[in-house]
Amino acid sequence: MMFDLSHKKALVTGASKGIGRAIALSLAEQGVDLVISARTKAELEQLAGELKNKAVTCHYVVADLAKHEDVIKLAKEALAIYPTIDILVNNAGVSHPESALETAETSWDHTFDINVKALFFLSQQLAQPMLSQNYGRIINISSQAGLIALEDHAAYCASKGAVEMVSKVMALEWAKYGITVNCIAPTVINTPMAEMAFPTPEAKAKMLSKIPVGRFGEVEEVAAAVLFLASKEAAMITGDTLKIDGGWLVQ
Image 1 (cartoon, rainbow, N blue to C red):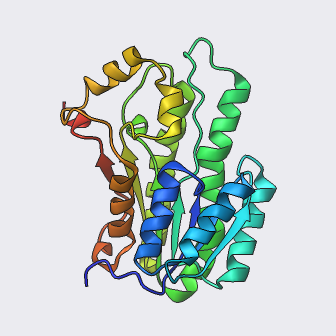
Image 2: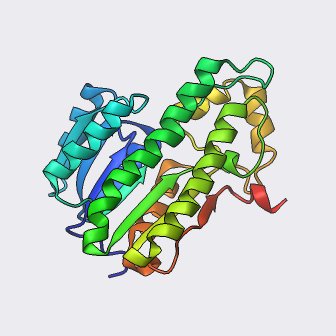
């Protein structure tokens, strides 16, 4: 069976809703044991219950990835549950839509703390045991905003551009240890975060006009890409970005 991930261990951040939730459910369907993390305990408890019904083990860790101490705590707790995490999905992310002239320092720092700093240091912590087993998959949920400019998204675009480059560096340094590091760059996906970023019919229509397939993406389509990049079939792919953008960037 292609993309057989049974008995692998994975950590998914930002798992309580949207893309992260879909990724956790898809991994569980493939027999992956999970650690899921987010800031909200109630949502994590609910998802953990659903995942356990799929005959996999699931643990949750409440963490605010804007706090470096929580990032380190999450890594340590995950490795206490499973001595090695085979698959790390850095999905947690935030966006504070503001024009370049109006971007606040607090928005900039919060965006970079979660989207870049937490992603890097969590990867660093979990890469250590991956090295010892000569195997690992790190999958970073980036964005088309890391590849092109979007109005009112200066901090977000800058952070996702940083994700793209730090992923390439990790891929370069860790390839010889059997660890692949890749990004997935979605366009607008139907999630609460997208509703916040593009709240009006006019804003949605403007974005839709740039997507040749004529629709926004679905969370399950991002999750399917994660399954592929997590699999042994993707062992020769590292330092790359898989775009799920409906053709936006071919223009």
